[in-house]
Image (cartoon, rainbow, N blue to C red):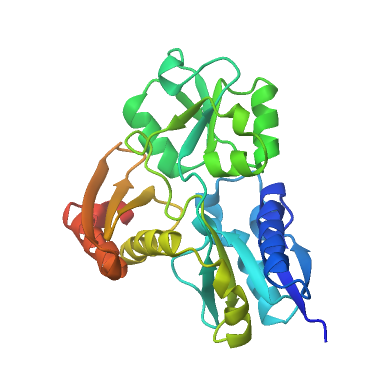
Length: 303
């Protein structure tokens, strides 16, 4: 008997790319499997005139997908890991984290090759508090303007001349075939990426063993270690979208190194720390790093 798997996804081009990516991987693994996409609109897609930090954070992009899972309209939901809140609601779990794409931020411009080439007072578009606080640290003279919408919409606004440059995630541009628009891959030193940036995750109903077995071959070990460390730090900090938090890890052999950052957009204060451990202790590493940031004053900023 032919089995059908339904994937809940948002309708944005990038979300659809991610869902199609999972669909094709599953179809390669299981030639007899039917895979359908269930396209949904989320609150985050509907409210485009306010910064996410003001209206409830990135979790707004996954709520409706979770309801779809709960009601049985879908079997799995595919998310960009940087949109998945650190607290997964009861009844759900992360079933798989896939191979990670380029995790860095990208500077995109039609006239300038990099952030340092921008003239005094240039207009830069981003709505990420994390990007804003780090951008202000190196270029306090820039005028930073709000930029919402999907990747295509943001590029269109740049092309319409609304900005001198915009900052997006490299991963999204690469996945949608806009790699040639990346003028500068911004280093982790200049703009530490968001927790989970570049990774795609699969959310499932809790203890759904059949689905777990089905998606198990999609799990990427290295991405799972790295993203788990970053998310453990974020969970200990209780970090939402309204405070600039960044977390980025690298693996060398059996060692994982995690860098964490908490910032204050108003005062410009940035707290940053790095720690390492064996890959067997990624969760503990995340908690340890968060504790260090709290010791340095993160709690005051997070309030």
